[in-house]
Length: 164
Image (cartoon, rainbow, N blue to C red):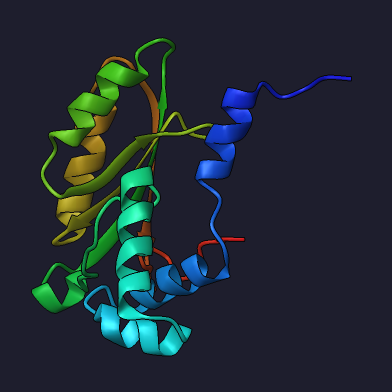
């Protein structure tokens, strides 16, 4: 029978979260500015408990920061665009760095699946979308670029992220 080394088991248990931690995360996902006092009241524990748990999750890397969600359409940025990029092996790192420097990119990451790189951009108009697609397609190491315009308002920090 295979046994998990104690140092691995200890590390895994360090990052386990319980129902109170999940409640804290869910409440902060809904409103990152919610006070610890308000969260404590909703969780039925003390404010110090919330503060300590928040700090512990931050120290463990479970919480990497807090943010706000912006609606780009309200800022006159008309289009939230998904860009899927297929790259000639082994150039995904090089292409990733080039794509990150293109104006309008919000998220650029390596992927496994249909695309080697996936990106989300906020672009002003159809012309800018076409220019961005052409710019990426002109990279010698790029095999294919697909672009989709997102119609709904996706949350880049989704509330439905599974925590259990």
